[in-house]
Image (cartoon, rainbow, N blue to C red; front, top):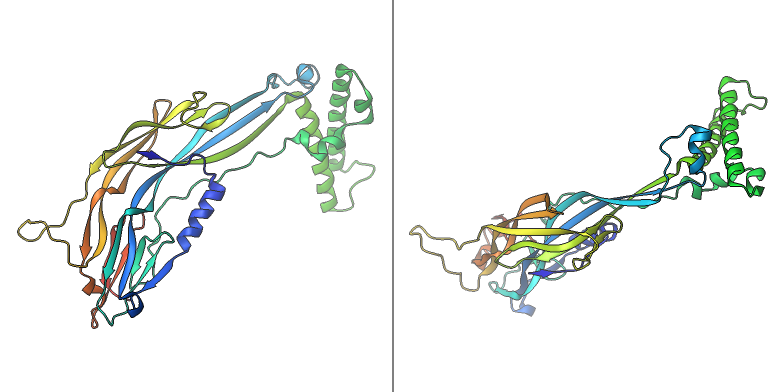
Length: 362
């Protein structure tokens, strides 16, 4: 088995994959190329997309005074960061196999065409319609936002007395007093008892939001702050025809998230690929294997496998997928695509090289 690059950020990775899916090349059989078109059948990669949730807890400056001044019993007292696996998504994609390259020879005088992926995997013959991907929607990374204490509102909440004082105890006392003052100001505005009421509803909202922000910032100096963000990483692997048995593809640290497989700082993320079916050549009415048609258009009859992903010994995802490397290669008579009265069209799965549709051309 070959394991490919670790840690493809979904925000960038999905965009790149989508851009590739929308980009095709068109080849037309003409006299210039002697009515022959070259393409490659795919080998199937399995992508394991791991979404992790991160939580950072940071004590406030006045955590020792949280209970005394604000009756906060659960103030954060020690800094910590935790990581949990939120989701694991299994998908597949095809990569052109240089050892499975083909030349299809069409009848001279005809003009069939093919749409291919940028790396030469066939998508269609005689059709402009590419099969839509059935891959599930992948999660997107959510960046960590600044804590309330890192914003401008926190600086506004600090009074001159708090800034000048060199005593932590005194600053905590002043901060608590300011919190109660802010609450009184908000109550007076809402009850209409303020000496300088806002001019209109929009102005009132701005003032109330500012007061609430200052109170939140000062309270965070006692209770601490909690910041959350997510990361998305994709590990790509290419199993051979024998499958995979509990291969460690990455490790996940409770502090740093997804790590390389050889970094022992995290618990193992493993994958097993168990063969559930192998592609076989078609047979005729007598049960005999059909022969590859002369000069035929090659396609893949894939096999199937059950992919199971486990984290720290517990199964977190499983899915049955089709894999080109578990199948066989067969072919279609190229005359199907050059029949003047009823030419055929073909749509293929770029992940496996399998036929999705074979019928009359549009």
